[in-house]
Structures are given as structure tokens and as C-alpha cells.
Length: 119
Image (cartoon, rainbow, N blue to C red; front, side):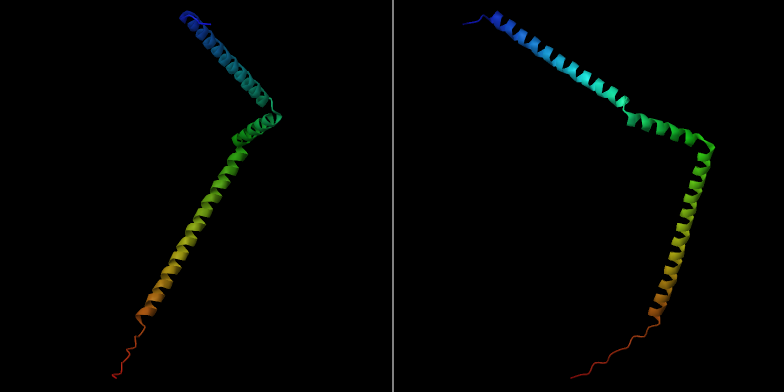
């Protein structure tokens, strides 16, 4: 069953068209699945609840009470930083004092010379 070159070309073109059609169908099926998943996600009750909580939180942040709370929080942070600096300075001063006492102790120490006996 020998085929002419024209028949071979036509058969190859037909195969390529079928392959392109299958790829297009797969792509459309995949897009339809993604669209369905997106719609399910948008209608998910948990997502709706989280969205409502986020909106509520945003409204609270816009209120004056939230601004006062934020100011209190910032003041507390600044106070903690001040306390940490004070503690660090006190530790540094204590370490310097201890170092001064330690070096003074070393400077007043007397070294005893040991005489060796000749054998």
C-alpha cells in the first residue's frame, strides 16, 4: 500500500489539526475548571466571614478609639525603650566601676621575688 507524497502531507496535516484541536479542548476544560474553582472560592462562607472581619477591623482602625489605643501603644513602646537604655547605662556604669576596682586591685598587688638556692 504505497502512498503518494501528497497523501502523506495531507495525512500529516490532518494529524496536526487533530492534535491542535485536542490541545484547545484541554485548555478550555482547564479554564472552565479554574473558573468553577474561583466561583466556589468567592462563595466560600469562611472567606465571606474573613472578609467581614477584615472590614470590621478596618472600620475600627479608622475610629478615634483606635487612634487613642495606637498612641498608648506607641507611648508604651517608647517607655520600654527608655527603660532598656537606662538599664544598659546602669550596667555599663557598674561594669566600669567594677573594672576600675579590679584594675586598682591589680596595681596595688605586690609581687614576691623568689630566691633560688644554688646547688
